[in-house]
Length: 385
Image 1 (tube, one colour):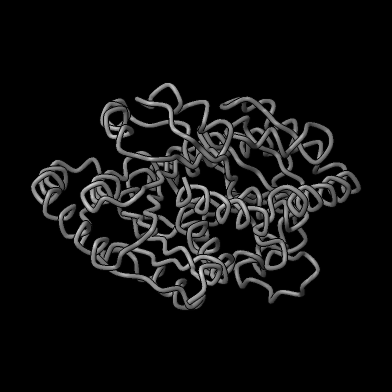
Image 2 (cartoon, one colour):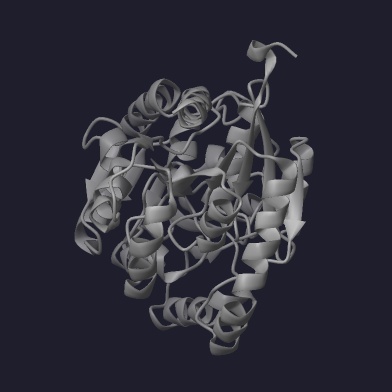
């Protein structure tokens, strides 16, 4: 084989198998760079059926390992600590056996096993960081383990700013925003109508795509719906996203709030394999999160030509500009959020104008092709350094 024909072989490891932004990013990038980079995903056996199906649909190679996931449950924490060294050693052996050139640790700062396994296997490792908040214990562990990473990928300027002070020794880093496939998220395609929307006819839909958890701050959105109760016959709030077992109590709390506040137009409709029909039907996309980095769901809404109203989190403010393609409000500012929604509800032409600009920003600045090219350059730089 000629030297120029050799493909860099990357092991991309993620310890969380449930589908979310990091998993979608990982799979899409792997697919986009497959002609130039050979990638094998290493993912957990448990809670990953949907992710496995997604990988199969893209014809992406993956390996399943028995990763124990860290959470707040005491029994799970004990199990995690007991099994931790065995899982690291198993992972290290697989990395050695396959002779990977680079280990890419995806999923954030709590993904410790890949870093240690790569070092044991003596393979260069890049650690991808994709959030702007972590608990103190995780930050403390990350501070020491950051020494073992050869390089870092930051998913946003906000993530870079947050983590740089916790990195023990400064290493070469790459800033690569989460990508949106603007060819796939195409507002001009005719999608089948989602069955749920048949129940909400002739209403302005204010929607968000978010797994139900406190970080998404859906309680604030509930309160905004209450503030706009005089519009309840005109608008509807739709939440699209999974409700995992670990968040059932929080979900019940939100449902109780809906009942207590007597809100008639706020609906949780669960997850969808394909969110495009819903995104196309949304009139306004809202992100009410407390913390984000480079939120894929917002970029997808932009690609689908939607006006965006978002809290000032992560790098959203770099791509959603006040009065240009949406509105940015402070976290927990119910009044500003309600005001912004009200503006767009009353101005359909402005919604269209903002949506067109959102689409152009997504195509020119957040496109999957850009992200793929940056990943290829990062891997080449790591291998050749």
